[in-house]
Length: 215
Image 1 (cartoon, rainbow, N blue to C red):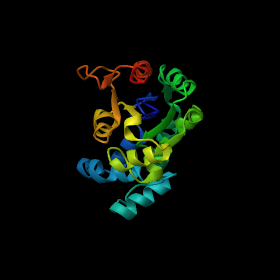
Image 2: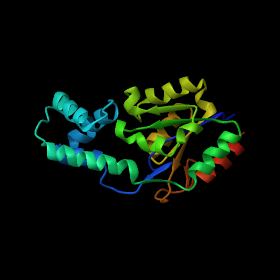
Image 3: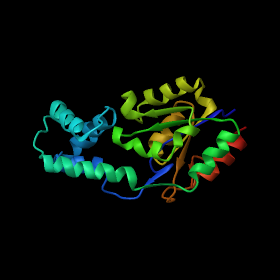
């Protein structure tokens, strides 16, 4: 029996409405080679509590030796971070789905790969009122698809993997890896890029129907 649904955040519940977000700007500003950024730096930025651009600058200097940005560049990065916080929207199926699950007594949790400054929209929309447990990668030191972050969330919920569904927009991190742990993983493919399977849904509205069918 399904007792809880675990959501991804970005591109699942919240839609970023501009493409030049802060993490991309950091890669560009510090001129970080793409391979190094993708394999080590990005993970560090999303699993370390970094509240300000000075925190980011000091972290990149200490951990990777990047030390060549100006105050003007940091000010520009500040502006992009602020844009990340406000140029966002909720998907139209987000609140109705959360309200339906909450009303029916299911536990609701979040697992989000997010830098500290990307937590703000979650609270901007008052989403926390629907959640029994919230797990941001920057707070716990793990990120998807590391199995520790799923296991931690299951422990906090007090549930077995088979009692949970994980849903999100990343096929590997939100569907395939959770499935290897015994959870039901659902890939939210809003743009219908992948073939239709039992693990792929087009809308969160389908999620509520799946939960009912499983129970």
